[in-house]
Amino acid sequence: MPVRVNFLEEEKGVEILETGVVLGREIIKAKEEIINNAHLENIQYQLIDESSCTEYNVTADDIENICEFDRLMVRANPNMLAAVVKSKTLRFSLTELWQLTLEEYDFKTNRFNDRKAALEWINEHIQQ
Image 1 (cartoon, rainbow, N blue to C red):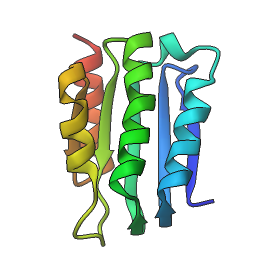
Image 2: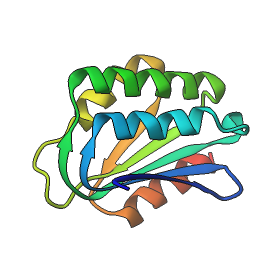
Image 3: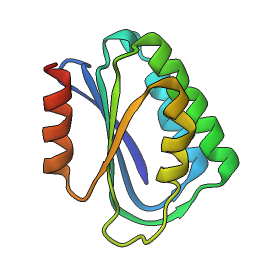
Image 4: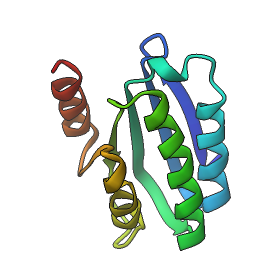
């Protein structure tokens, strides 16, 4: 599966792993899975790992749909964070558009070149 969801730390965090060729509908399905989790209000962060993604087939409409799910998540937990580990092979992704779309909802997001830095940022901000 190109997009997989793992709940972490007794469902305080959620990891979205993207590998290979990723389609917008696969990300949307992952976001639906998170929204339908019984403990949504306890989720403090999303770790979106695109480091193994080789191709992104995601449209601007897909990004809008993905953002709608993220807006619902932020309503359930206004302090939720999202850290994105960028792909090592892709030169372009729609992460920037996703971040800009969510700015008005005060959803803290950040992009990183490696997983370690993303986790450090998450831990730093969750402790505050």
